[in-house]
Length: 213
Image 1 (cartoon, helix red, strand yellow):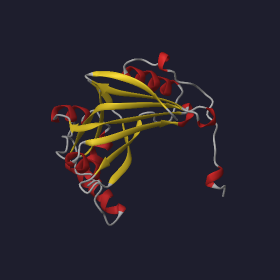
Image 2 (cartoon, helix red, strand yellow):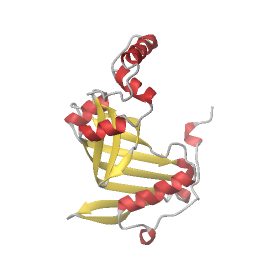
Image 3 (spheres, helix red, strand yellow):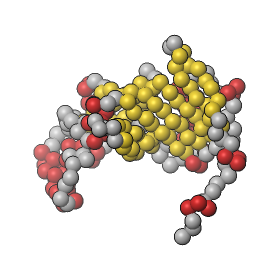
Image 4 (cartoon, one colour):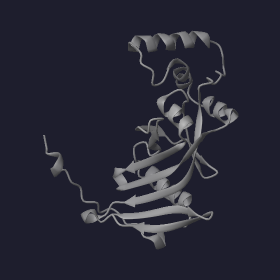
């Protein structure tokens, strides 16, 4: 096995200058996201979501970005999951996108809140039927004794909604929107002298600063 301390990569693909970056971080995000799509980056909407529970213990996991509306990042989950409970108790959170093929990373900090039921229902009913059944069947983050228990629950839910065209949304499932106050764009550069541009809101306007790598 190769020693971890000897694993290195020299980043040489691009650069990021303030004069070339858009003044609006959401526009800049869209520019980078579209470039990730064109480059066929695997699951470009996959993002790390970090939360903190009631004791101050941090936790991270991958979720999928499902939209940006009114400059808020949207994702969906089971509200009774660990992340759902964390966000209901402490709305502060962080998001992170990492696209190694482009040598890019985007860090985001903000506060999350549940979106309204109508919007959650609309998205839920746009999902594949199998995903809808899974949302009903899975007591997300709860301990289960076996995979078979989960599969039995799936079969029970399939029978329950057999012949039902529009499966209703479970009460415990829905969306969160993250209201952003900080976005950092990171572009890998050679010799670890990376480009980092930090956007923060000041008096209702976005201000950009370059950070040392």
